[in-house]
Length: 262
Length: 348
Ligand SMILES: Nc1ncnc2c1ncn2[C@@H]1O[C@H](COP(=O)(O)OP(=O)(O)OP(=O)(O)O)[C@@H](O)[C@H]1O
Ligand SMILES: [Mg+2]
Image (cartoon, rainbow over all chains, first blue to last red; front, side, top):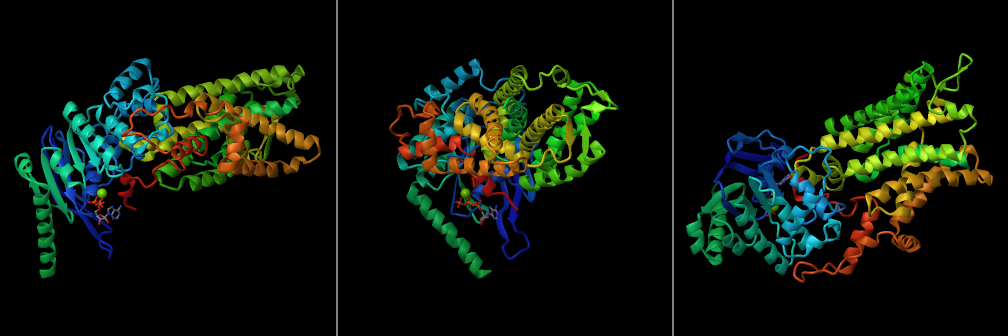
């Protein structure tokens, strides 16, 4: 349902600062795939997600969602297929708007926005129901401004807003990284649940190896703009964090050997 | 004093436009200096040619909206910085306004010895131009526009407009065409400035090419003062505050002149000083606290409710305080994720 073919992205091409952030990436996600992505800093993970979401144009290659070529489609128009949760808890919500207003914006994601009232009685009931699933008591604070919530609450809300509309693809970029361990754990659990409950297809970037092994049915490791290896769900089951670390280091070792030889 | 209140109500229409750009879109739009005159000049020239006053006034709105669209295109299509785009339009409009009016000034009092038919000519002839009846009519008109704005901002499209100014990263990720929302808002805002200019030229009896100079400060002062008094917790109060601010602003100037503290030539200086004072109050934490004490009923609803989940909750009280005061200050400044990951990826 999502197919990337030969996607490349280079920053500052043909200058001394040239950075090849993505090199000839081929990736296919089947319906319901939940892929976790690991890789060191600067590996190109965020760039990959940005290119899929359309906030960055790719230099080369094609991106197809459900048989529709979206390579040239602008980011806001891809939002009808894709929703995202960012690393920064304040990035995914509008701080001066209330919880219910934020949810109304999420509800109309990718749809025509006209002059109908954003928050209606029926919608409010729907939002309350959805918020109840978070178990945070937010359902009683529909008219609180989102800027008043803690980072963890906001991230939980962002995740709910990104998922309750059942997008074709959910992109998560280190969305638990800014939270303390306890809250990160809560949001991780929530992620597992919303993806399963809504049957979403998801890509999740994380630096947390155990989280990467624990969630999802596929695991990718990226390095220097390439996908170095992939674990399918069976292999993933039997892999420990230590195995993964070892593999991670050996891949990086190979790369630096190769660059030394060249 | 009645005339000061009346002028305040007419300028409130412009201030509501400034509210849209400055507060909602988080873009200080100087176009209004030009579009106010464009609206006034367009209405004036139509009136002296015998156009129906209602149509002429509407044309003032349309002309202002067109000016806003120019700024919008410079900003969203040609990617010129918003403030600079608005300055460019404002300067360009100066010449265009002279063309529209075919000169520096158009009188809408008399034409060939006969009174020109305007929205206010009936009141003028009856000697009612400066009366509480006129104040009431203008107040109802200003409130009606305010209510339309409140309604608009609560629609699906209006929420998209609000998100555009509040968090552009989120807006784009949620499928909002920020280009569309910005252009529509700039058009609405400058349309209101044009409408205000059209009303003012009829009230004043003439349109002239200088009438818009400094109008952005009049608008900003009204927005900042009004929002400082009534708060921004509810849209209803925020827009009401703009009207109140505009009237207060006129009254302050009226009293300053009445007490011979200032002459007509000092008006612009007073505008500038008032904006500085209002900005200092709204930016200074201590003064802000004092101010908030003085209006005890504002922002009450933002007092944090008991927090329910110990794991996910627990923002230190300071944070909540900050979040709250951000809400009543310039939108977005602190709370906006200017460097959000999605933007961080953008190429130059
Ligand atoms: N907007 C940009 N302009 C220039 N270079 C960029 C930009 N965004 C990313 N890069 C470069 O592209 C490479 C990949 O960056 P990316 O942000 O995708 O890495 P990442 O895998 O997400 O790393 P991290 O784990 O640190 O988030 C890096 O070398 C980075 O410097
Ligand atoms: Mg990253």
